Length: 358
Image 1 (cartoon, rainbow, N blue to C red):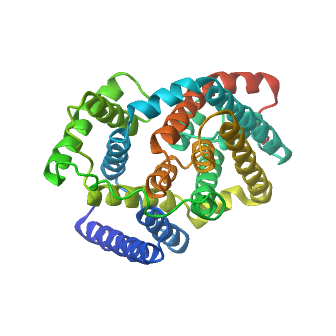
Image 2: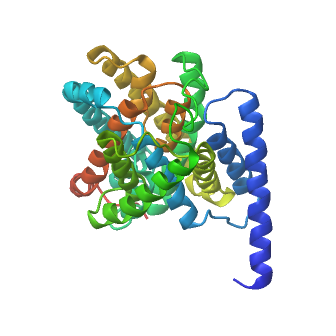
C-alpha cells in the first residue's frame, strides 16, 4: 500500500471508528445493552452499505479483540455454576443436538431456491462458528460466497434483535452485570498483566492443540484455569479494553455487509429471511425446553440457545446480569458440535442430494 493509499485508509478507518464511538455514546445514554458492540456494528454497517470500496478490520485487531473477550469470560468461571452445568449435561446435550437438527432442516428448506445445493443450504444455516464454517465451506463442496453472506446475514439479524428480546421479553436489566473492573479486584495494572499472560499463553496453545476459534477459546481456558486455581487473585480485563474489544467485533460484523455482498443473495433473500427468523424462533423454543429441564432462567436459556452471534450473546449476558458462564458453556459446546459435525454433514448431504445448479 503506497503512502497516499495508506493515508486514505487511515482517514477512512478513523471516520468509521469515530462513528462507532459516537454511536456507542448514544446507545450508552439510552441504557442499551452492549453499547460498544452495537455502536461498532451500526458504524460498520453504514460504511459497508454506502461506500463501494471494501474496508476490513485488520486481523491483529480482530484476534486481539477475540482474545480479550475470551479472557473476560474465562475470568467469570465459577465452581458452583460449572457444577450445575455438569448436573444438567443431558438436557444441554439434547438441546445442542436439537439445534443441529434444526440447522439441517433449515438448510434443506433453502433448496426451495433454485441453484442452492443441500450442502450450501446447510452450511449457510449452521448456527455457530460463522467464520470457521465459511472458511471450510469451499473445500467441503459448498458455495462459499453464498455461505458467507447468509451466515453474516443471520448474525446481523440476531445481534439486532437479541438485545430487544433480552430486555423486553426476558427481562434483562442493562448495566446490572457491572463492568469488569468492578468487584474489588486488584486493579487495572494487575488486570492488564493477567490479560497479557492469558493471551500470550492461551493463543499459541490453542493453535497447537487445533482448538476451534483459538483466539477466543485459548485465552478463555487459561483465564478460567488461573481463576479456578486462585492464581489470578481476582484480576479481570480492564473495562476500557473490554469495551474496545466488543467495538472491534461489532465493526468486523458490520463491515462484512456491502451492497455487492447483498446482491449475491438476490432472489434468495426473501426465503433466507423467513428461514432465518424461523430458526431463531425455533431455537428460542429450545431455550424454553432448557428452562423447564434445568435451573436456568428464561434469559439464560434464551441467550444460551441463540443460533449465532456468540460475541453479542456474551456482551448481552455480561451486561444484562445473565449467568454468562452457563450461557458460554452451552454456546461453546454447540460450537464444537457444529464445527466437528460439518465434514460428516457435508459428506452425507452430497450423497443425499444433487450438486449446485449451473
